[in-house]
Image 1 (cartoon, helix red, strand yellow):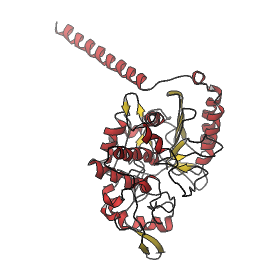
Image 2 (cartoon, rainbow, N blue to C red; image 1 turned 180 degrees about the vertical axis):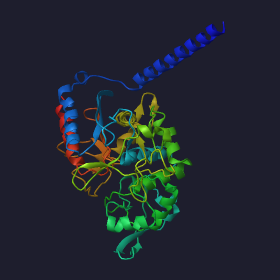
Image 3 (cartoon, rainbow, N blue to C red; image 1 turned 90 degrees about the vertical axis):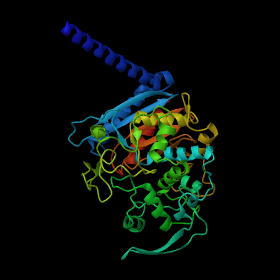
Image 4 (tube, one colour; image 1 turned 60 degrees about the vertical axis):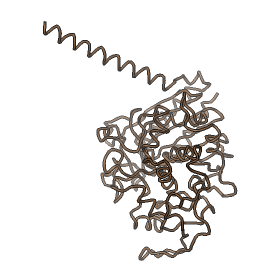
Length: 431
């Protein structure tokens, strides 16, 4: 009798486990809609060449591989995983691999700031110093002494605003954009360009940045820098919440995102894609465990997990980032969830630079996005960005198209080449 009872319990356990798995599959199907390329007016033959193109880069040892996702009319029409996550080629890339998004964090944090503007907690032309007091009195760099890393500066004629943080015109520098000067100043004060494993916080970094010189007068020019990191701290102050919690509760969770966050449990390290560097011979090699004083490759799952970098901190999967992109393409909504009002979402991918020259191509810049204009490869109004580990995405409203390709080579010299080939293949597939 006891044996029959135990057997019944085992059968019931198997049954309910199976039901849970089937329910999870149903949820996945509902969250992601799929179609064939032909059903949305695209050519599978052209898209299939993406795999061949990526493999050419793999065989040339320029990239370990890539995960690619393409969606049209709200439906995923193409997904592929080419190459390997590790240098020994024993771990093939998978759809569920976690990729360091780096600067692809910026659009998400920009959305967070725009949400707070919709609720009246922030205003576009608020001074940054209203939320981070060290920015109330800013100075502009005039001269730098490389022998002792001292500098001279003068009081800025105005102070940075939130609008300028959103448009990368505040004058806040990145170290890697000018290592001998900006890099030396930031390193001296313990400020990283990217997310770090060290036990520091964005509150500490933002406070320090306000006391360091800007590289130009606020609003005078476009200069890529730690603007969105500072903006992330503003989001924390205005919302009263840590940046990661705010984004989870107000952006990612409402639209069904599960694996796109600043940090993950160390048990997910096996799902974290490996980082590669380009060597002097132009070929990739897996990054060492120590990448300098600020960085380790596995920072998303190991280390202090305290640095919430609004400009570089998030890690996730292609499918999860697609949900964010689709919400933006839908003017701020996905399903029944609304993360932005339609007019706010549209404003984010309009040219916000006015008379300021945008130095990166013929396009312009919105609130957190590059915006295509008079470009041969993409229609006007396509908006996009990429990340330091060679990730890239673009959203094309004209064709209702989303393209995401995730790679993991830190500042690869081949990004422009592979991105150009990807664009050509995608648009050649449009019938």
